[in-house]
Image (cartoon, rainbow, N blue to C red; front, top):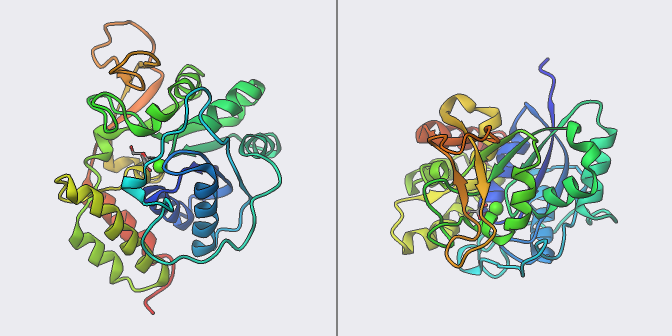
Length: 313
Ligand code: RIB
Ligand code: CA
């Protein structure tokens, strides 16, 4: 019997967060202790509501807590052009079975870490606001964080600006707190997530699994691909699921340890994850950066996860 790894999911669902959580909830390796929402793709109210709907869809019975209403310093940036006005446009979803708990995300995360008899993995797949708040308010709990597998940044390019990726750009101050915390980090940035493309024929493979969750995942992909197709992508980059896959299937990826700094100033570069690939700064590595992935193996993983939720209708 493999001992499950205690984890916390923190995200801004968001279609790719939702697919990441379908993958996480299907994994026999993970024990999901809590889910926390963050302001990112949509307002905190909408991402929290979406989180509750996803948890109900996959039958995830864990506490859900609402994150901070805005980034640490900056004003919120949302992404309705990508995820729609609800933040999770597309298929009908069940109403949340449970309400969020009567405490904020940071308090719930701290309680889970405190109570755990072993260090816990954090999976932030949105802006790092909640994670930074946890580290700032509860520095004594750092040893109870086993590893942070995050989706964010991009060493070679950005997506929301030429230099910055959305999650980091929304809250660069939070990202700086996380990347200077000393907590082990695996970074699934655009360098790898833009390779993690799911093509329309893959959508049909997942839809053909035939259960309710697989059908919804296929319809999330249909919607999410709409924006990316309009800007020339051959498939949907399921960014956030790469962060989960990095723990459950690292062998399908290539990773490089390097020093990564977060730019928090600049008209053009605020929110950039500056990766010292050549080691010119002589600073110790603070992140394991994923630079490559076996795309087919990644899609296989998503299809396997979809099949976890039962055989066809
Ligand atoms: O840049 C991609 C990231 O921003 C993903 O996490 C997506 O969900 C959005 O949060
Ligand atoms: Ca996200």
